Length: 231
Image (cartoon, rainbow, N blue to C red):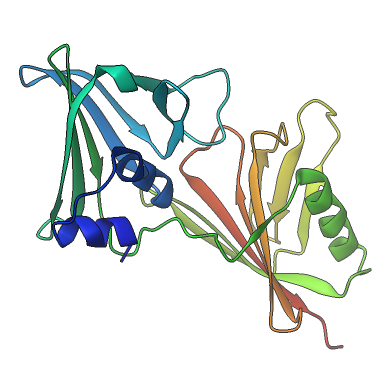
């Protein structure tokens, strides 16, 4: 179990910034702002960034502040937290001096932790070069399986995805292309400062795992497993 969630469960006192940072550890948090019990704002987030005077809650891999909520530190009156084991949810309640209440609900705690700490970051250019070497059989790897999921239940598996590459025909709109004999999947990988790409080498580089969180798909994850050829 996440160490902060565990500390809340045990009744320990947690710093506000550590409670808010739990948002970064899980795939989905529901943020609700209310006044006298009536909802004012409700949104889904998966990122919390701390700045000098405020906390910013937003969705990963998006730009232009399409979805964001800013909470000024000076406006915070009190913060409390509770873990409800029956619904496997962490509640963080923030009372503001203006009478508003900000509620963070991190649902389905068990098994939904966003954990890439064993991975290193990879940029889109390194990914492009790697996939080109796979197709041209220069690095000895092949894509055994690709799994595309999101937090809302979408789950697509593609085995032996023989055509996996970065489509650069439109230089302003690169796309990750994954296909086999029956299925084709493409998703934008537009700006390297927006995409999140992680890679992990396994057991003496006999396999390589790549996780991609593509542009403007904040709750989607593409997980690709590459194995070394032995033929």
